[in-house]
Amino acid sequence: MSAIQVNEPKPRMIVPHSVRGGAISLVGLVIGAGIWEIVGRHTQAASFAPFSQTVSALWLMTRSGELPTALESSLELFGAGLGFAMLFGFFGGLFLARIRLLRIGLEPYILMLYATPMFALIPFILSLFGFEFRAKVIVVTLFGVWPILINTLEGARSVSNDLLEVAKSYRSTEPKLWRHVIIPYTLPYTMTGVRQAIARSLIGMLASEYLLAATGLGNLILTYTNRFDTARVLAAVLVITLLATILMAIGRAIENYFARWKAGV
Image 1: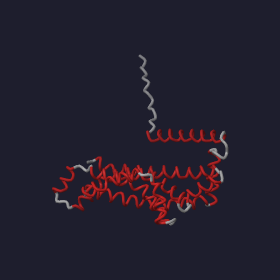
Image 2: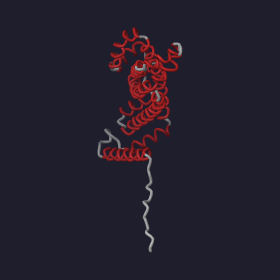
Image 3: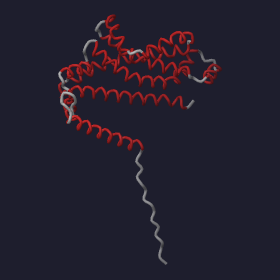
Image 4: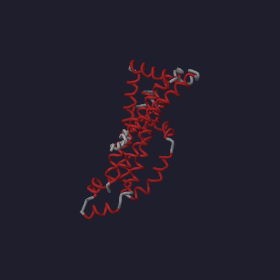
């Protein structure tokens, strides 16, 4: 009697979702670069440059030291402005959430300033502070502070009353209530505001470098736009885009880290 052979199914290789997602993103970037190259080669040189020329210009600007120097200047301005925006937005939002009378009185002004185009305030800032570095820091701060403040305010106001009651039942003082309940609960909301503020602060950085003292990446874009050197203009824009993408990815990672506390509530 012959033995019956059973063909067992071969195990399939399981590709993690992160690897597949990364591969799809990479393919999308390659396709986008190809479209950029094709469009650039069929467009007037003074209007648009191909991807290959942009990368070449990026390499030349990096080797000459022109791009690193401009990037350092812009990062210094961006970091100072975003730092002040985080400081004022976070603690301002907490105070407004805990002091009801202050919140009712100032909330209409906050919403109006959030909706106001900050470009309109740059001439006013120029007349008060001139072309100095502090004037540009004020511009970047004004661009970035409002989403942080509003998100922090909403996060602090949404703290569960049950959490507050439990903390008070253990005779927690107001400072301990802030440190152990309110601030940990609010941090995911704050980081959402920070991610929004990153993009707004980068816009404020470029606006201040355009309209105030011409420095940094904004100065590079302005200079090479006047020379109709689109490859170098696009190289500077590409650097800003990559910078924004990296910073927002870091902000997302920090937001997810702090959101673990809230998920366990």
